[in-house]
Image (cartoon, rainbow, N blue to C red; front, side):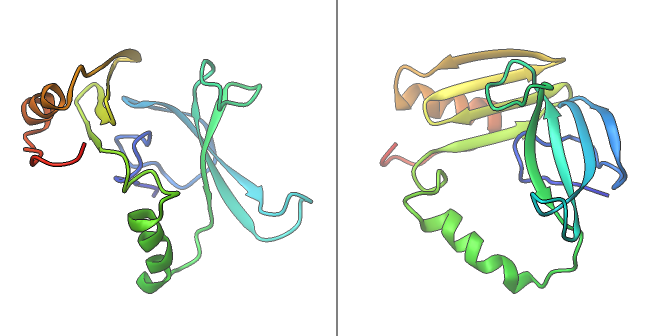
Amino acid sequence: WLSDVGFGRAPMHPVRLAEAEGIDDPAGRFRLRKVARGEDGFGPRAWDFSREAPADPRSGPDGWMPLYRFDPSDRRIDEFAPMCSWHQSSPDSVFPRTLIVTRATERGRISVRGMDWFREADGHREEGMFTDTENRKSFIDSEFGIRIPDGPA
């Protein structure tokens, strides 16, 4: 099974680890394919996980946006430490410099990224921008039950 609770555009329900061209989920339509890891077609097999998003500029000509590639090899927890540290502290990582809050809802997802907000439900998307950080703090408090402390935006 594939269940990625930390990835914002992932399905809300676990996905069976088997090739599938159309996986319907409240978060959208997904596909899972086995592929050769190397661009030359050689190497160990890996999995490509994509989301159907024909209007997204990151999507390929077939309308599928790649989310990530992975292999099912066993890993030790310490193997994740370097990337975890990078995501937490690198100036090239989006996480230390951008406020990101997201949660799944019964019919989609609600998210805040920087000064933008998004609400997706039943395949429809609503979005907007906050006028100031106080407006954003109030929204996060009411929608997520999280109180953002005073300080840098």
